Amino acid sequence: MAKKLFAAPEIAPATSYEIAAWILSGLALLFILQFKLLPALLGGLLVFELVQIISPMIARRFPATHPSNRARFWAVGLLIAIIVGVLGLAGASLVAFFRSDAGSLTVLLSKMAYIIEDSRQSLPAWVVDHLPADAIAFQQQATEWLRSHANDLRIAGKEAGRVTAHVILGMLIGGILALHDLVKIDHYKPFARAMAERTELLSNAFRRVVFAQIRIAAINAFFTAIYLAVILPLMGIHLPLVKTMIAITFVVGLIPVLGNLISNTVIVIVSLSQSLTVAIGSLAFLVIIHKFEYFLNAKIVGGQIRANVWELLIAMLAMEAVFGLAGVIAAPIYYAYIKGELLARDLL
Image (cartoon, rainbow, N blue to C red; front, side, top):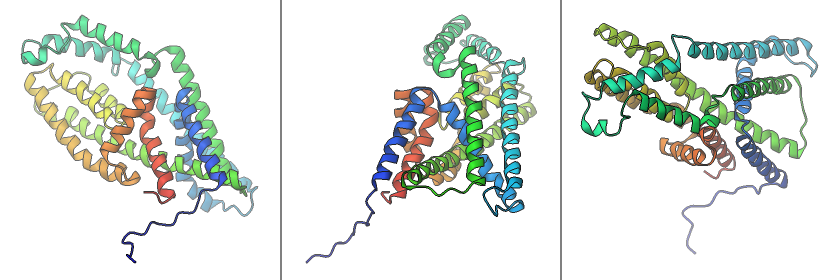
């Protein structure tokens, strides 16, 4: 009898509790995207993970000898209040910066429009054919694009207020869950345990993807700042709105792959205000930096979730087609979660 060369691994059959938990978790994730609750989810997961990272110091200082350890309760509660306060202050500061004269997105778009108009004479014909006719046409196209994507970009005041409220509520819920997880001891029954395992996998996926992407965005913004604020001035080239471009590079850099394309486009267009040579030099520098970052991405993000760049791109493309901009943001986290479920069952 022929001997099998590759024996299939024995996988324990899923229990009815696990199947129910998978179905409920999948429906919950779809519900979050369908009803625009992603900001609340991200805010809650961010606070929860930050507490999980920092709280071991508190745990060593206030060991939980019993569930009602009040000293540890208040210490963790204070930590949550500080984290929520710092995150809220950071968000408010970022909004204030982009509304100021130094970081105004309106000023940046207007500047880009006139740069394109002034550079038409020095650009190749095949490039000019794909550019707006003048600054007014550029502004009209940008306005039309923003209008058609207003629901996704949350640019309306009412929508921005709703999203802000969702983020704050999400952070509070994340803080409460972190406090519950760290201070109280629970003995889960089968279904509750299965749901807790799904939640833990989602939390791990968020930590691996988002914290890694924050590091990548910070590194990207750092190198971009060196180029815009140090290298170019040393060469006698001073671009306008440098602070705005650095801030945009970090913020959009939180979106994998797509963020780099957005920031690169802005920097290259603004570089045209000096000359076509400076724009080509900026493009060459950005390409070199991002080639280096691809290796960094592969090491940080890909290593964390065992995914290649093409896998994330496919996930982002599919999610964008169904859910729009929110799908692009959620795709890496959802993909990492699904992959985590498969790895937990030894299916990958």
